[in-house]
Amino acid sequence: QVQLVESGGGLVQAGGSLKLSCAASGRTFSRYNIAWFRQAPGKEREFVAALRWTGVTYYTDSVKGRFTISRDNVKSTVYLQMNSLKPEDTAVYYCAADSRPGSSGSLYNRGAYDYWGQGTQVTVSS
Image (cartoon, rainbow, N blue to C red; front, side, top):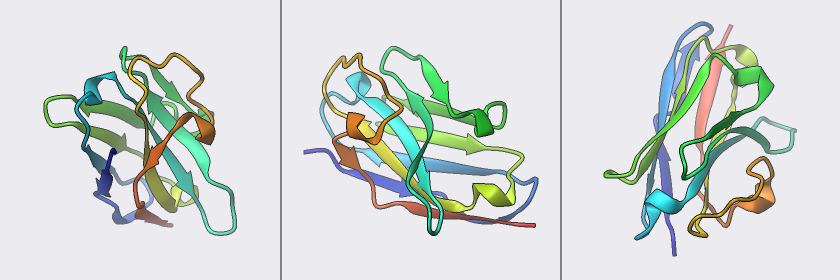
């Protein structure tokens, strides 16, 4: 069983920054693939960024150059540094984990992940 707990959301003005954290349980965290998704009101949950256990990163086009996903395997924590925030980044952000050690499949789809956090709200004002 893996538990994911997000933190770091809040209200920020456009152009500002936030850093989200996701603390994970699990003995083999270093072999998990980890991702961030987001869901805006009235919209489907969408992929934001992923970090494969090998260190390879993936981003949706709208956040490339602004967001950075990283992890600290000692702390079993994954981060999402968000810079140059825009009002359209407003959403609930969810951390997700693919806990199958060494998994090599696509990380863009929700179905790739077997554990989810409860979400943290990010609101960007114009």
